[in-house]
Image (cartoon, rainbow, N blue to C red):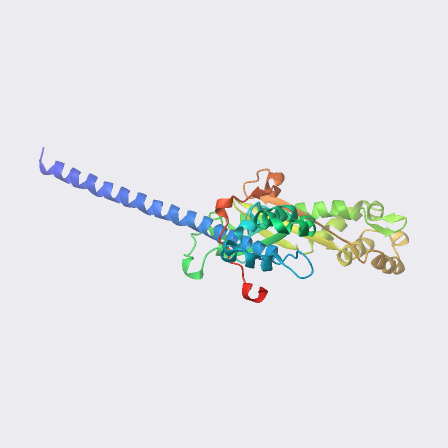
Length: 329
């Protein structure tokens, strides 16, 4: 056998090994970039939320003249970092991503926890902390862009378009599947809202439920009318989950009932104009809402887990330098 044959084989294997190593390197770099894109906005949004929460805590009043911000003037440590005052804060739910390309994180802290934190730094203020201890939970939201325009390469054919492709679990989701998942979440939100709406009183003697029982077609028409309305809010969650919130106000409810009255109720049983006018006044403050979820994979979603608050580790609290301390002096 020609000895140069072995030389050619050695070169071929070397080149292939180089190409394989290069491919692995590229894949590793892309994976790292993807992970950075996933965690970077979440970190930024969480920091933004915690900073906002801290500012709200600082604005709480101990009495008619003194705020916690003014109290911080007595502490050299809190002058430069007020984050100890929000120890015990919680993440309310998983990060959400809106269609415009922002990551949204919500955090909260109980009034009792704030009072405990303040007392730890200012024991003499204990007698003034009762009102803060009874304060409802403070809530704040933080925002961060998913990626800047310069960081958005063209998506592969069939992949999710726009900012959505930067959300973990959404890069390979087609536009058609995304729309189908959004629709499923929307329909669930509408059905859950409808379950509440049927309890509303049109008159003292007539509920929506009873009115819809007047015709086989009535309930179907009512649901169709709700499905023609727009959602209040839509968000994407990591892992290919869509969350949609639907809100039904008095005007929307009455519009849907009018559609039923005209399309699904025989004329002798139709409600008169006067009934709708009275119902509008009766339901003036009426509003119900519900949230629906759907997964691109069609899997069941643990909604309780989505709503379970998660404590923020003290080591993860960002340094928060109180604003406007000069004005507080």
